[in-house]
Every structure is written in C-alpha cells, then in structure tokens.
Amino acid sequence: MKTLTTAEEEIMHHLWELKEANVASIIDQMPEPKPAYNTVSTIIRILENKNFVDYRKEGRGHIYFPSVSKETYTAASAQKMASNYFKGSFKNMVSFFMQQEDLSVKDLEEILKDINKN
Image (cartoon, rainbow, N blue to C red; front, side, top):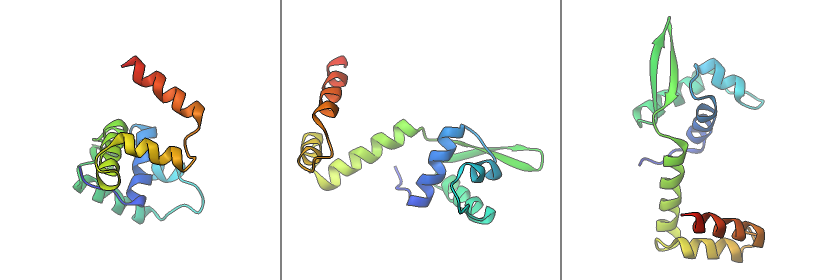
C-alpha cells in the first residue's frame, strides 16, 4: 500500500468521517486556518491517483468517497511501522511504547482483553 503524506492523511481522516463529500464539505470540516479550495482539490486528485479515493459525478461537481477503509490503512501503517522500526515484531513495538511510558497498565489490560476475545 502506498504511503500518504501528512496532508493526504488529514484529508483522508475527514473523508473517512464524512463517508462521502465534495471538496467544499471537506474544507468545512477542517480547522482554521482553512486551506485553499485548490489545495484540497489537488490533494484529492493525488489521493485518486494513489487509489485511496474515488468519485461519482453529481451535477457539475464530484462527490468523493474513500476506496480504502480506515481499518485497512491503519493495519498497513502499523505493519509498516513494525517492519521498519521493530524488525517486524509487534511484541517489540508494544514493548517500546511501554518503555516510553506511552502505554499505561490500563491500556495494556484493555489490549490483553481484546487479544483474548480473538
């Protein structure tokens, strides 16, 4: 799966939340200072070329929607992080976050509950 820039990820997060939207609706969801219409439109076209976004024509405009789910992208990103920084080991990755104190005991207990469900 292709990697997204920070700006592309931001647009995707808004589009995942909205499910489908035109460029103006995406901009409405963004914090101040809002980016220019042309900037968001260009990023959407890049996301189309990367096969993350598709569209349908509606009137004279386009309605965009994600063609990659947030879950699929999250899983691929986590796998890439594990591969690039932790020798492919999720155990090493979790251990790293625990050592950095980014993962509390409560968080770890919740993770263990989720693991035991599967």
